[in-house]
Amino acid sequence: MPTPTPTAIPTPTALPTPTPTATLVPTPTTTPAVTLAVVIQQVRPSVVRIATNSVTGSGVIFEVSALDGSAKLLTNHHVIEGANSITVLVRDSVNYTGTLLGADPNRDLAVVLICCDTSFQALEFADALAEGPGSEVIAIGYPLGVDTATVTKGIVSAVYYDANTSRWLIQTDAPINPGNSGGPLLSLAGRILGINTFIIREAQSGVAVEGFGFAVARQTILQVLPDLKSITFVPLPTVVPPSYSQTQFGPSDGSLPHNTGDGLIEEFNTNVSVLDAVIEARFFNPYSPSTGSWDYGFILRHPSQGVFQAIVLRSDGNWYQYERTGTLESSQLLANQWSSAINTGAGGTNDLKLVVLGDKLWLFINGTYVRELQAGASITAGTVKAINGYFNGDGIDGQSTRFEGLTVRSLQPVYGPSSGSLVHNPDSGLIETHDSGVDLTEVVIEARFFNPYSTSTGPWDYGFMLRNSGFNIFHSVIVTSTGYWYHYVRTGTVESSQMLDGQRNSAISTGVGTNNQIRIIVLGNDAWLFINQVFVAQLSLTDLVQPGDISVSTGNFSGNTIAGSSTEFQDFTVWALQ
Image (tube, rainbow, N blue to C red; front, side, top):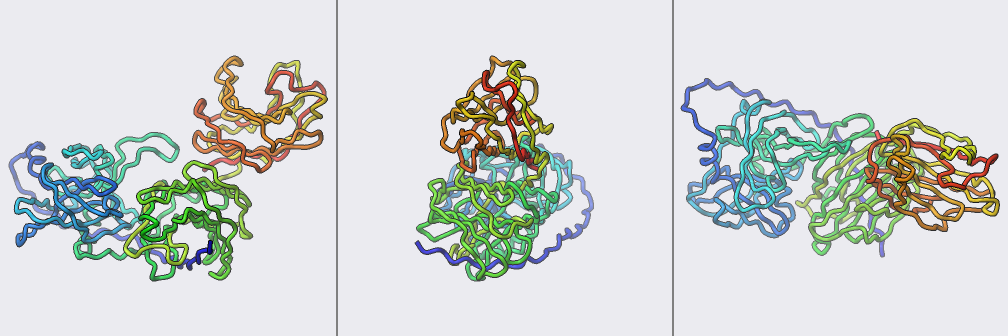
């Protein structure tokens, strides 16, 4: 199979954050009070349901032609992205065929044309005064693909400019659900404030959140609307998103436009510079491989122009690891392989996760551990970017690759490297430990353990205790002199000990004078166990999820220590996610 030819990487340019234009304050007038029910009845015919071959969403009619009765409606780009057909349901009763006029993947907006009916009704845009925090708003749409529009009510929580996507956003607590995308966020007067676009269900820490919906604001809509109506794709500016801190970014959603003519890699720059990190995102396949080739992934450790490492998934089902050290010609393929974990189908997605630590990278695709990779020659801190179009010819002009949940979290050493001895004391009836003193849930931990004596002298064991939040409350991962490893959980008493997993593994060295390096990567409530650089098993930590201390241990099983002996450990280190 021929190796694809990589493309060049552009030099990013800064983009100033725009300042909204001031709006004249209108003279107030006295109008009769109108109930909310009446307003909803008036605006309801303008809100439509949009169905494509893969998704359903919502939209709103904003313009009706007096000449032919055609109507233009606003929706989100991600609602119609990659659609073979667009069907628009008006008044919950009549279906019309939609034609895409224009789309802006970066701002996630699109305009669709339907024809023709003299009864189409359009809504007007609100003025900026209605968007202040605390203003009451209503959201109308078709959540979960229902056939009848529903209405929710809330307030404006905030209005701000998102430089990631070059758009003004309205944050609201009005309940918004999948299927509401593309529907209008309205003032109580029934005017368009924005287009409901996305929601956040979970904070970066994993805490569930509510009332955290976002709409693209009318400032941005009115700015790009002339181009969206002109049967063209809106030119996309260079995106310069802000970093949330020096060591973390996201989660953030976005879109990477395809542009095969410039010969450059398309980028979304997190502006976060890290050496060791966990990097992850969900990428959406832009179209079927039979339509054309595509690729996407990450650039990392990118300290300067032309110096970086890249991890790329491709529509041929292969993943690739590349390194560049200054020029396009310096590109070097470090590793690649076909993987059954990669979803290449139209409408499919791939969750791509990298754990980067020193000279090692661990690749995960759709929750499956794929391979340990050796970093290239350049092991230095640098920025992280989501990319597509890494290889020449991968992409179709006018299409785009969407991603969700792009997150960068730095891995920082919080304990060690520490070396020492665990003295055997079989008479105590207790596990012997050396504690790190750091209470964590998501970590990378490793240590090298030295076998205390030959298996003919007696049995032994050693390993890690983690999430140790109280006496007899912990997970333990243990290697034994029989060549078996075990995963136990204890929830309050010795009797509560439960073996969750375990088996014999040839990677374990049991010989006298030998040693075993054990590494565990813990992300969320999943853990991956490595022994002597060999991936052994994926573990579930759902039985005990609270943070706790991390320790090295010996004597986890009765009879596995000998008085006067000790188990030596070396380079016990804990890295925490920042």
